[in-house]
Structures are given as structure tokens and as C-alpha cells.
Amino acid sequence: MAGIAGVDPEDSSLGSTAWAESVVDDDLAHEIDAREIPRDWKTGYVPLRRSVPYEQPPGPVAEGQVFHLNVGLVNWAFELTRDVPLMDSEAMQKERREYPNANAQRPPFVLKGDQLAASTFWHGKLLDQWANDWVRYHTGGKGNYVTTAMEDTGTLQSLTYLARAGRVDLNRVLVLRTASDYDQPRPGITAAEGMAANKIGKYTGYLPALESAWRVGNTVVSKLVSDWPRYRDHVPAGAGLRSLEYPKRPMVTSMAALPK
Image 1: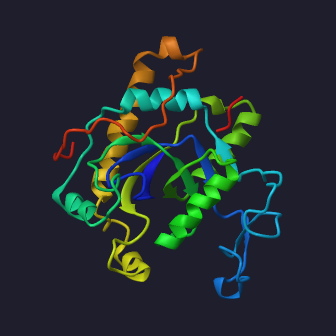
Image 2: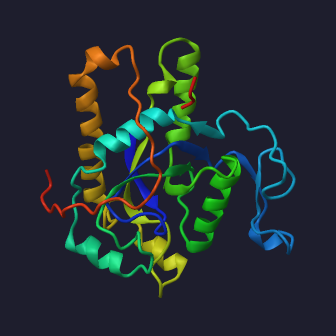
């Protein structure tokens, strides 16, 4: 599964690609308007079947709330693709310089980072803070929110039903998201101004993100196909590093689930 996404500038940059270990749903929740929340609440968003934000101890996870992918397979895909050269552009370089975060200023790179999936296109620094809290809460403090997308939890739920019917193997699911835009405005403009500038097809990193999804995803698919006699009965697995500090990539300007 591959697609474009908004990205947390604390973790990554435009055009970068993130392999998810966990995919968390945003829509399964309770909510009250921010103008009516108690003064001591950090957000008006409350986990499903709970009474206050981030209630402890966390209750039973509702089906479809969180999907944990096969970590060994994710590590293998990351190690296979970490040196894939990704597309960059002058427009992306200019926008990167407007963000103070070290990772936001980096040329496009491949990393591991978890995803928050939501039907609502949200934007802003405060909602980014909420997204980090929401993912951390639903993964027992182990997850790190990096990309925001839309349909992946729905797709994973469908694949879960197919797995129960014996039609697919969830150990073989991979989720890749590539950064077309930042999930918050650059310093100096409001969240409303930043959101207004984010229109489908108008993101600074839109075409490079599409290209990155193909380059990185195709590398994995080609390896699986070429070595299918090896991987048909044995799911590949990697060693597993989670550091965000990876070697810088050369700039390229041409366009060319639940574990068992």
C-alpha cells in the first residue's frame, strides 16, 4: 500500500518516504467542541469508550483502531530501500529552509515512521501535537507519528477480514507513505493560511512524492518478484533499526497488519 501524505516536520522532509510499523485510526473516537472542553483538558478528542483524553489505563482497543505490521518485514523493506535516490526540486529546497526543524530541512530520505489515518484533512501545529499524543497513546508509548493519511486503516480492516477468510496473509502487508506537504504551516503564517495553500495537486512536494512512492515501492516489489522462489514460503525479515539518522541521499532532479 503506497500513497502521499502530510508529514511531521520534526521527523521528516518533503519528498521523503516512511515505512510504517503501526497505523492508527483517527476517526474512531468521541469528540466535543474545543470551545466547550474543560479547562484542564488538552484536547476535546477522547479515545473510544473512554471518558477523558488519554484516560489511564488505556481500555481495550476497538477493532480497526490500531494495526501493527510485521516488524521484520518492515525492517527488511527499509534496509532494502534506505539508499534509493529520491527526487528533489528547487521549490522543495526553498520550502524546507522555512522550517526550523533539522529533519524538515534534510533532502528527501527513507525512514521508518508510523501513520495516523483520518478522513478529516487536518492541519496545524496544535493538531500535530495531538497526532503525536494520539499515536503514542494507542501504541502504548512505542509509536512515533510521522505521516498523516486517509484510507489505510480502512484498507487494513478489509485485509483483516480477508485474512480471516484465508484469502490474504497479514504478515505480508507493507504501508508506505511519501511526504507531499508538511502537516503544519511554516513559521510566520497561520494554520488557516497554511491550510488554504494546501490543495490537491498544489502541494510543493506532490509530484516528487508520487515519484518517491514509485521508486521505493518498486524496489521492494521487484525484489519480491525476482526472488519469489525464496520468498514464496518465507516472509523476508530485516534486523531492525529505528534511528532517524541515516546517510544523506544524492539529489535527483529528473522525473523518471497484524502479525500472526
